[in-house]
Image 1 (spheres, rainbow, N blue to C red):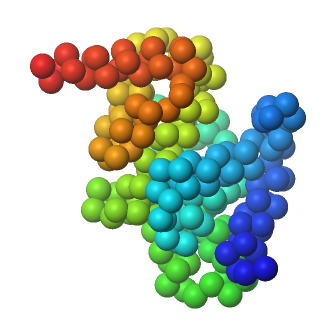
Image 2 (image 1 turned 90 degrees about the vertical axis):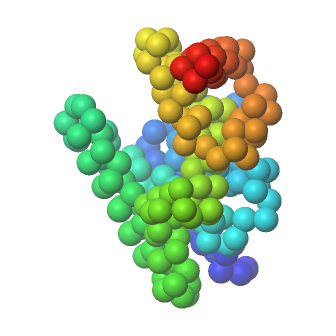
Length: 199
């Protein structure tokens, strides 16, 4: 087995330890393992020519995320940003340790760390592609579940911000997703709101 396959296997073994379970294909599976698999599937669909570094970054995007719950940080934007920054740092650190153990060179390890930390997002094509995939997985797999937990106006605001994070290619891919009816309605409302603001 090549080191890429070994890395995927190692990432999955770590994420299989997630105590949080979600339904997937009729079975309860570790949440972050399912997320990692969906990230890889979406990347392959949207950007089939992705580099090895980008494929690895997509697979370990949330590695060990359950160890750093949002509730450990204060409410509000400052607490949220502190939480997100620590997640990026820890994901990059954990992935780097695994990759070095498998013999990956430091330049590839450093590159994957850059992608996980979303450095130079608008200037880095691969970082933007990873962000596109994150947004697409959210819209396809998490929006319908997430929506009932917040007021509709807040959800529409979140979707509008998500839309702006995507590249034109990511936005086109989003419009082609086979979304649940509730998600599609919310996306249409968010896009209509943006049109009104720029009209």
